[in-house]
Length: 160
Image: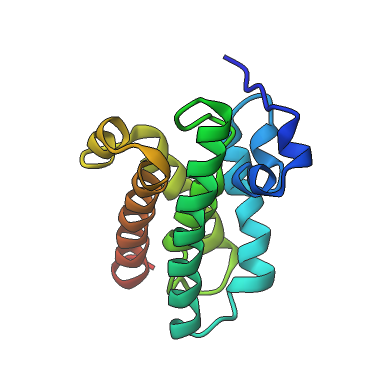
């Protein structure tokens, strides 16, 4: 089914942010497009942050995301509309925490996060079905980001 983004995405700043700066308005695979939109933000703004600053950013964007996603979902009357992709932004950024610099890791982090977000292994699938509101929208992607982070770090330390 194609994504149908409401006109409010382009008028309401909260909806615009929840829709990942408009990337979630992609007609197909909005989660993938949302994650793609998170990549340049990571490269240009986040990759150079120190550990403490990066953790602060993750906590801040997660908390802001709970509000953005919850408010947009409520305004639209649809729980977790496919175009709401702020959660994909944060999930990808969690994946990339402490990742070495380089395109290989950026791409590997992208692939790992998309796999965990799409396949939703337990406990992600349980959270996706049972936890609602802005927290639920964010939490399953936070878990996908954490699982991707663990796999990426294991690859960095034991394979590459």
